[in-house]
Image (cartoon, rainbow, N blue to C red):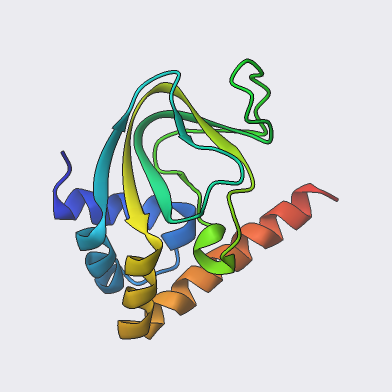
Length: 145
């Protein structure tokens, strides 16, 4: 179980929150819920509602565009400090991929409604998140050249 300070440090290292001010991360850290997932499980399936995002404390999550558990072709393999499931927090569309648990994992989740309430009450939080998303998109664009 992580304490508030550890959660803030983890958030600061997670790509989506990397440009958010530390004082704003405190309020985000207080809203996180701990979840344990075990190898072979799915965190969510493609086309599920996007109701929360996740940050990996430990373990490994595979992201697949195919929800067939027999097919293990991952477009990404994510480890500690990485986040997933964040797209639906902003576009209100269903999940675009399936998240498989590749190793026993500890996740911190943040509900969409809680994030949106935080953004309303702490508008600088949204600027930090947008800056982080923009940086990730720029990096992706550079890699695709």
